[in-house]
Image 1 (cartoon, rainbow, N blue to C red):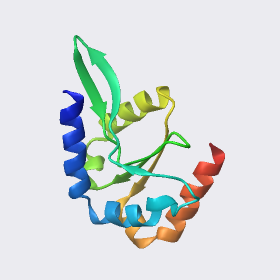
Image 2: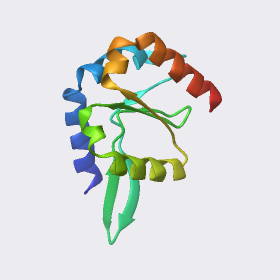
Image 3: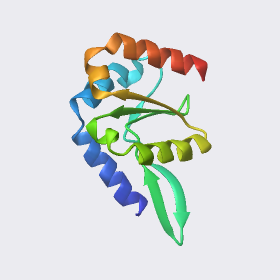
Amino acid sequence: MKYKKALEYARTMRKSQTPAEQFFWEKVRRRRFMGLKFNRQFVIQHWEQMGERFFFIPDFHCFEKNLLVEIDGGIHKEQIEYDRGRENILKEMGYHIIRFDNEEVLNEWDKVAKKLENFIKSI
């Protein structure tokens, strides 16, 4: 996949966020969370083979902490091995990753915020 195509896909994903992603974005955008800048659906190249590039597009990314935040819906219960492999690659690249369920973000924001804050402080 070409970078331009991955970027177009990321832009499409930004326009069709889940309610949990929208809620999370409102809480962290414009440095509202701990003064950190977050990006949505940030394109990360993780591999190139025979001229073909492969990308991951995590839900949220924070440059200052090399942090990726994933907001998981039901599909992630069906792709546990894929997610685990993806996380391993991203961790090898130096990223810190934290995951939350959609319901957790929407219904327990205070707990999510505290967990995220503690995670960031531990980096």
